Length: 302
Ligand SMILES: Cc1cc2nc3c(=O)[nH]c(=O)nc-3n(C[C@H](O)[C@H](O)[C@H](O)COP(=O)(O)OP(=O)(O)OC[C@H]3O[C@@H](n4cnc5c(N)ncnc54)[C@H](O)[C@@H]3O)c2cc1C
View 1 (cartoon, rainbow, N blue to C red):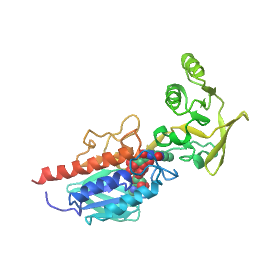
View 2: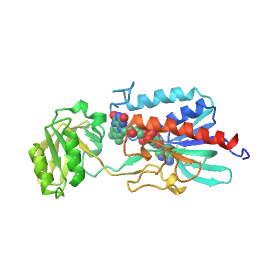
View 3: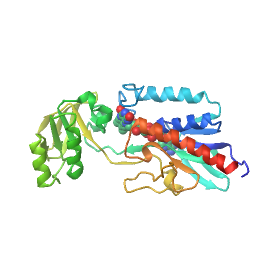
View 4: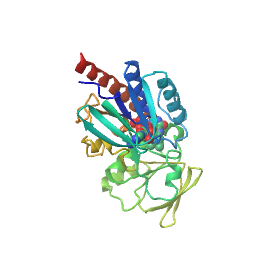
């Protein structure tokens, strides 16, 4: 192949997963461009947990430390901005940014994460990641044994209540509209002391993101210290789909065990590929993708 490209790899997304891939590739002497728009999904969370060596650290501090370390590898370059177009051509890929810059590379990695689609409940967005939580492994320990609510319905709600009962028994399930739990599920939850509220939620009363009360449309007020819920999400970046990458029924990019998408030369890692959302997994899959991309280039050239 003639070298009609500037970079071996363009990584779109320069958070935990993208930076981890960049470190693997930098240590493999690759020319890499990391394009990042700076909107990580956990940016409102005061403290990140369950990532060894960084437990309790501020999310932005973890990514700043990561960037400082990756910057030491001189073949890694950074561009702060939004990638808005990616096309495949005979040499590899061309990526365009919102500000009209064009970059080209031989391989591409999407570490672009997902965008949570927060419900219109007043106060929800203010509390997201502070006292309205998506994952007990990330934040459950800090609110163990506290008055807690889960917002979910049906099978998901039942399963979520079962999971969270590991961290607190002071639990209520808010179905936010007519319950779709089966009679058996309702009975089991009641036997475990889980209260069920099926009115729609009007708003959250909170202090600087720390939830105090859930206010229902029927004016009922329930005092809690924490809420768990899993809002719907979409891919943060539409470019992999534009390039022909397939997604699964959950809306996650399909990758094989080597982090390869179905489009030759295009890889994906981190939250955009897995429902197991955690910094540790984003770092792990990014690191692995970096190594696999490097090996693919070696195999093509040797
Ligand atoms: C509220 C909340 C709290 C969390 N708390 C924890 C916790 O305590 N512990 C834990 O382990 N995990 C936690 N997580 C999960 C963790 O934050 C994610 O698993 C992790 O951030 C995923 O890393 P990523 O690199 O895949 O994606 P992200 O961190 O979401 O980063 C994606 C990056 O890609 C960029 N990007 C997207 N599209 C483009 C584009 N077109 N052009 C340029 N850049 C683009 C974005 O701006 C962003 O910087 C939390 C998640 C949430 C939502």
